[in-house]
View 1 (cartoon, rainbow, N blue to C red):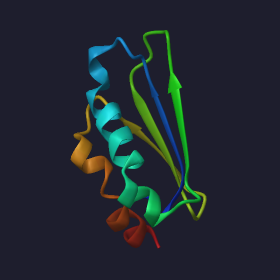
View 2: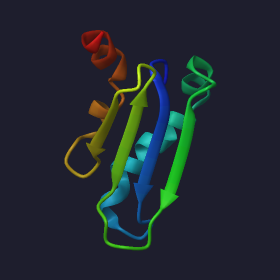
View 3: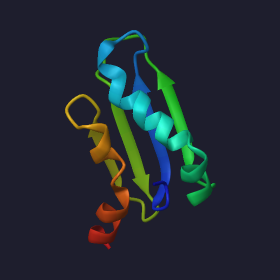
View 4: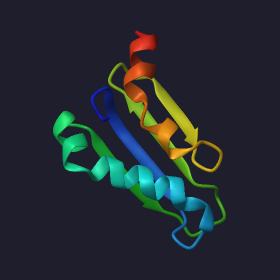
Length: 89
């Protein structure tokens, strides 16, 4: 899952009920198999205290940055970076 990523930044408010997709994505990034696929990928987590919506920002190894709206995108769509990177190359 992290194979083509150099950095993943996850921002959410822990008491906000809209954070389900962020938490699931964080769990997927922390999985042993995902970390073994790219140990150099930086995983940054920021717990916010304001009403900012949950957000996932990914940076691909080629430098392209993509911001995902974690409220409107199902978590299954977030983990499909292999096909996105292949299409962008």
